[in-house]
Length: 123
Image (cartoon, rainbow, N blue to C red):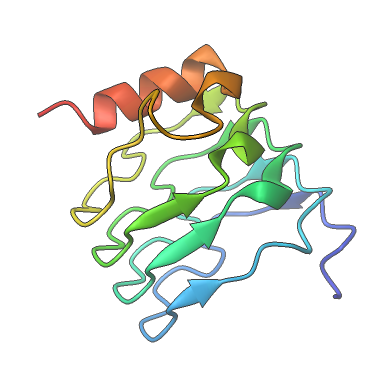
């Protein structure tokens, strides 16, 4: 609960948490900007709920990069205000289910987020 008023997290926040399986981001409702390598290289992370991230406008480089067990980004509509996506967005998340217009909330996303998902899931 100590993170409720945080508006920005810097680089490497929760990076390389080798035994992290899930991340509760519900206290990040005021978060606007996420630094590089946010939750990256967390090999056991399986799901993340994006619902509370509705004020986030910037996802810097290596967002969730290398989370090879990540299967789901729940409530993606929480990312609807993102206007900038850095390099290596979701890179090496080989277990992640494709996110496209069949996923609830996709239509609410910014064009930048849709483009990011299209690039990530085009093989």
